[in-house]
Amino acid sequence: MQISRTENTFKKKRPNYFAWVGGILLLMILIWLLNSTAATNFRNIGPDMIFTDAENVSGDFFVAENGQVKNGFTQSSEKARSGTHSCKTGTGDGLQFGFSLDLTEFEKGKFYRTSVWRFQELEGEKGYLAVAADDGKSFYKNEVFPVAQESTGWEKLEIRFFIPPDAGWKKLNIHTYSTGDAVVYFDDFSFENKQRSRLSL
Image 1: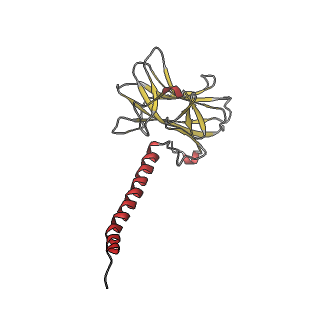
Image 2 (image 1 turned 60 degrees about the horizontal axis):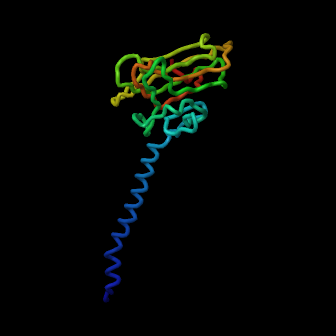
Image 3 (image 1 turned 45 degrees about the vertical axis):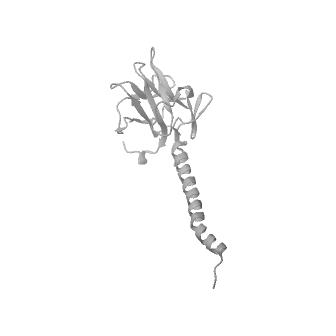
């Protein structure tokens, strides 16, 4: 049997064709993985959580899952824990505010948790996470000491709190702020509604 030159040529080129297709598929997978990492980290966010990673801004708001977080003008690409952006509070007279979340729909007699990741180049008590009632007096709690720290310098601040059944608050505000003495970055801000049985104190 005599094999034509055309058949020989096809057999020689076929492995290159499959290698080319495989390379394209591999490239598409890599691009998808990179986009998934850099894009908003909203997967696995349930209905009881409000979350923003500061990646996107709409007007004066950070785009968030299940809510709106104010002060989008503080978005910065200088530092980031996840993605490419964070919330930056700079230096200046008085307190400098970053993420700010107003809550008007909350359940009394429930446990809640809020957290944020902080990066500050200077040591000391510079960047805070705080929760305050609408009158600023009946309830106020802030936190400056981290509960976790990464090798990159990012530190996690967390506040767990309980709203009494007889609370007269109409609004709660959760926010980050710095003293104005140094630049502080905040990222991956979240608020969770937690049942007592699910929240280990």
